[in-house]
Length: 443
Image 1: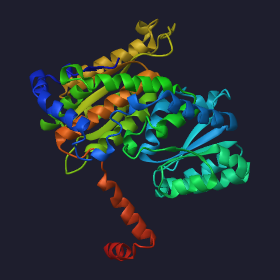
Image 2: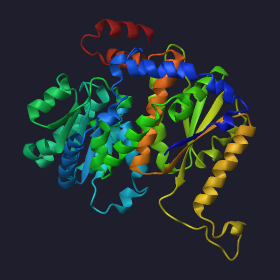
Image 3: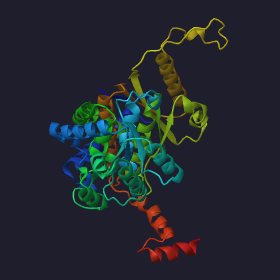
């Protein structure tokens, strides 16, 4: 089971201070459970793990099996919560050199619709020109610019390369049950489709078809992913003293009130890079509003100790650090001996590489705490589907509680629309004539 260690924030925030939030945390949990919190139309994630049925997972796996058998590559078209969770889990569970060692059993998983890069899209379509590829189009509305553009290109190419009949078989839509351009397209073309629940926002949607189908297509165990989340759902329903998600939320809030306004999520396992990217969206989009919220940042260590380490150690003291630690690696590799010992590292010979990594983690933690950086440690036993399921739900529940403590609506994102309005005005989209005139006057 995931474990949380907040002992190294004690020099900055006492245990008594954390425990004093027990009543407020309980009230936050009750508001989520009772649906009395702001944004209560979007709390379907709260009991999502326990609501997932074997029949639902069987349908997901059956569709994944078709894509796996019919495709050399599958492109996931989506942006924000429509791709980050799936990418995070797939990257965490994949061989680090999967593109070089692909054994032909699993399709290559690619991502599009998360940028408007002309070179990226051109290079992607060129790569796919020699591949049997399929597409999972993830969009509730079907009108998000980045994803809609990518899907236009991919749909056309797939139909031209593979024919309309095969394209209908290897294009899957994950969208709204009844409304929107993506739903209309799926129904018209006869695509297999899955529904994005109305009461689950994108950044909380990893355990819906949005995340589960791409993860299953990549060849990973979604039963275990869900089981991990189900177990954490039970643990995270308990009072503060027995609830690591609540403790993490309370610790973050206590540090925030002490002027620690930036949280750096660190890892010592390169495969966790996109877990941090997903985490940044989850917390940044949920709590960054009303001029409130902890700023979420991330580093990959020890790599970034040689770039960001100086700032973390001696920069402005407005930060705290949370480390995700994986207790047991999947492989065993010993530090080699060298006869000449020019680098002076023979004292490490025979030690596991992971032991060296763990001592780097502990040494860095102690140095950062000495340097005035409160430190939280989240440990998972190993990097597998079950423990990632735990980690995902742990962060989701902590986020929901923390936003209640902050007094913000965790489930809206009004600021996301600002750039879209300006972009559409600059591009002269019909219906935006007044906005186009106003924005041109600023230029």
